[in-house]
Image 1 (tube, rainbow, N blue to C red):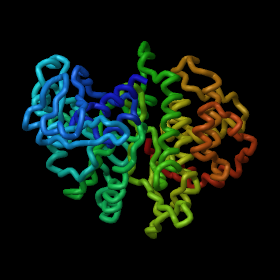
Image 2 (cartoon, rainbow, N blue to C red):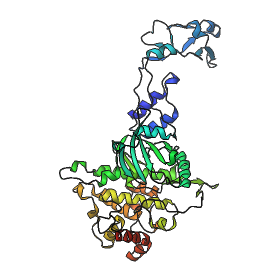
Image 3 (spheres, one colour):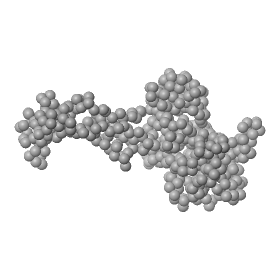
Image 4 (cartoon, rainbow, N blue to C red):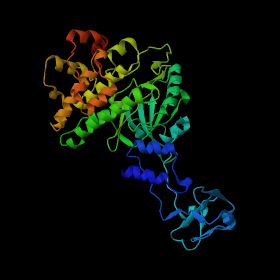
Length: 461
């Protein structure tokens, strides 16, 4: 409520030059953690002067003082046809009377602006193409000290643009493909239109020097995968991600993907939902990033979404997060995104990586499937570092949700709309009656299992 009142007061400042624009307002309303500028003194307010008759407009006056000749020249008469009283407003210099100077006449907006501090509204930048030179300068030439993390398809660096704007620069490793570079640039232009409190705010991009660089606003210090999967030493349990944060991260991520699938003007299939693509802000609010592979679907004349066919069905994504049917066909669908989301849910619950060659059971999804087949207690999947400190009902909900989202049969997966409802407590939508047999699961996941065997044969971990 305080957040809304504060925005309302900023929007109703009497000087129009001091009010924020609607782009800023939308951003401020979509994020309660958005830092609002301080309010100016409300000792200043406009003066509406009552006139006894239109003929007196040549020398208007009021009980508060007399308007100067220069201000009177800018006055336009407004007649109130419902009464004999007339009013005027200033068309040029807005006329104010201040509480401090109430008995000493009227001052103009120009003199007021000299004496009163203007609110400092953060600028909501439209994403733009940023020069390679700017990015090199911002990241100290991609120095090791600025490296934040190794992310999907590249490395993330902390940078500072224009001396005070903190950004995250993602340096992608796919720069050798000219067609992908063009597609990458086009899709990032579309991303500039997306607005959701759980999506990373795009600031710009760069395709110079054969590079593919994505620049995001950066107010965070953690990546979800790092926070979940880091190895903790004894006595450092305070660094373990608490259960309430885990559940809220999953809820917020579901809201963001639902927005992409159903709420925005176009339908967006992310194709790269992983725990490395989720950036955590200081208050643990997650923001989904990594849109380089995103597929934008336009509406047809019936209002339904359809893929703009570019003739490409190549598989692009992170092994372990890609659904079985996507691995086989390369066709981007919302159901494939749901599968990737389900893998992140299982990571959040278990604290284990989707793919980990250090263990005999490499694929987390296969490990969970074996739990279901053997009818083992699903609570055993909980991250042992939580030491049992979790809400059992929420834990079981997330485990079951992760299982149905990672069904090998896309027809068995819920939609993101249903997932949002389930996370709000509507467990009736969780349908686990239809279970895949071990044989069916192995057949559908044949490509992934074959890939694991080949990598293991090479001795790669």
